[in-house]
Length: 296
Image (cartoon, rainbow, N blue to C red):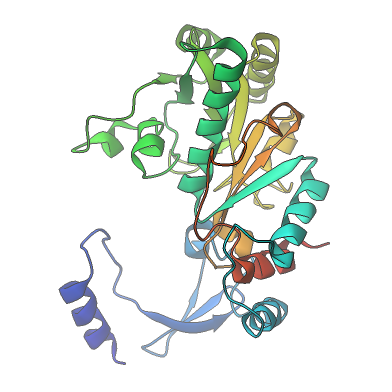
């Protein structure tokens, strides 16, 4: 199909939520993408942190095709081998104890926020439910994760927002003021949408100590900065800390929709049957692709 026809159909039938560049991609290999105009492009944007391992990888394609030849979806009322294997791989690689699978980074963060609130409620009762987020952060576009995004430009038009979110600067005095009734603090060790800003090492270590001493859960949002983009599997590893919850998505399944919330020791048994769910979470095709990405 010619670019002009793709552009026309897009403009006529898709919601106008994106300001697109005048290019349509139809193929590629590695970091090189092929446009319908026949030109080759180098993908420095990595599909906004999704194609971080390139496109059209032979091993990944074989893994996905092999699963498609078996079964494309399994309800979470039943077991699925790729889902269980991927959870094992993630836990083995990171030291996490359990995993919840969803479809996106926003969904992974929703899971982390709900887990933090239940953890605090079960241990301390009501009234200790605030999520502290840093100014300049980005955590998703659902109402809860949009509220937790510490940038005013994303907060237009959609109020009233979810309650119980406080904002702080990346310094401990600011965090302590915001955390008076907090159950969790959420950070990106490298803020992506906030300008690619790495948090100061001393601040992150002091924050981890503060959270540990006050039984406030530390959530590391690794949706943009995880999966090797900082030289470690997760960015938090560069800081010598261990969080209580970690969220990851984007490049995890090599281009298929997936999100994951990883539970570490303090949170591994917080959620029980009925506390959370996701229709397509742990989809075997997406998990088969992710296994190819994560495996040693």
